[in-house]
Amino acid sequence: MEILDGIAPVAERYDGYVLDLWGVVHNGKHPYPEVPEALRQLKARGKRIVFLTNAPRRSWFIAGMLDRMGLDRALYDGIISSGEIAWRMLKARSHPFFARLGLRAVHIGPERDLSVVEDGVATLVEDPAAADFLLNTGPDPERGSQDAEAYRPALEAAARHRLPMVCVNPDRHVMVGAERLICAGALADIYTALGGECFEVGKPDPAVYDPVMEIIGPIPRARVLAIGDTPHTDLAGAQAAGLDALWALTGLAAFAHGDNPDPEVLRQVALAEGVDPLAAIRGLRW
Image (cartoon, rainbow, N blue to C red; front, top):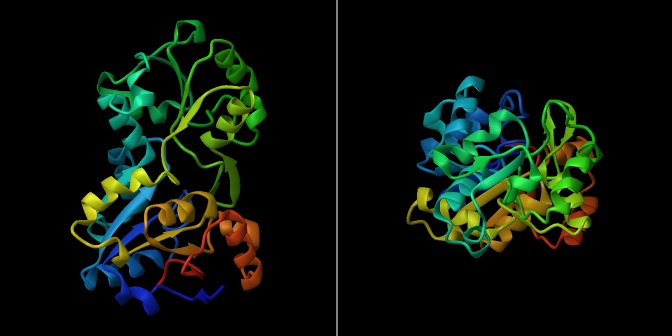
C-alpha cells in the first residue's frame, strides 16, 4: 500500500473532503499540529470540507468543542455526527426500527451526550422495566472508559426486558491523547451477544453520508475523498457510499501499527476488513 506524506499530491483530484474527527483532525484534546494548515490549503483551493464523526452528540455540540480547541470555523463547511443523525431519526420516526420505538429510554452514557434526546424526541427513565428502548451513547464517569465488562449488569437488565438498543456510536474504541478508550460500540457487542437487538447509528452505514453530501453540494461522489483512521468504520463506510478513501495513520491506526508501519501489513489489514483505500497518509497535513 502506498503511504503518502501529506494531502497535497492528491488534492486537485477531489473537490470535496469528508474527514473523520477523532484520530484525524484532533486527538480528543487538541488538533494535530499540521491539520489547520492542511485545511487552509484545501479551502484556499475552493474545496468543500465536512467533518463526519461517530460522536454521540449533536453537531452543534461538536462545533462548540472544536471552537474550544481553537479550530477556526472558516476551515470547514459543516459537521455531521452520529448523534445528530440519531436525533433526527428519533424525531422523524420514519425508519422502520425507530417507527416502532416508544418514547421512554433508559440511558447508558454521560450527561454530556443528552443533546441526542433534546426537544422531547425521547424521555429518559431510570428503570428498564419502564423503558421502551435502551439508548447507548457510551461509557459514563461512574463505570469508566477502560472496560466494557463494567456495563454488563446494566446491559443484562435491559436484555431481560428485551429492550431494543439504539447505539449512537458504532466505534469500539477511540484514542483520547495517548489513551485507548472504549466507545458505545463495545457495549453493543456485549448486548448483541446477550441476544439483544441493536441498531447502530453512524459509520460504516452508507446512509450517514447522504446528509454530508447535502452540505458538500453538487459534487459527484467520484470527486469526493474521505479520510479516516479506522478501516471498520471510516474506510468501510466511505467505500459503501461510493467515495475514495485515504487511511490516516494517526489515532487508532498509530496505536495499532506504530509510527512507521509496514505497507504490506497495512494492505493485508485492509484486505481483511474488505476495504481498498486509495492509499495511506501519515497524517492530515499539506
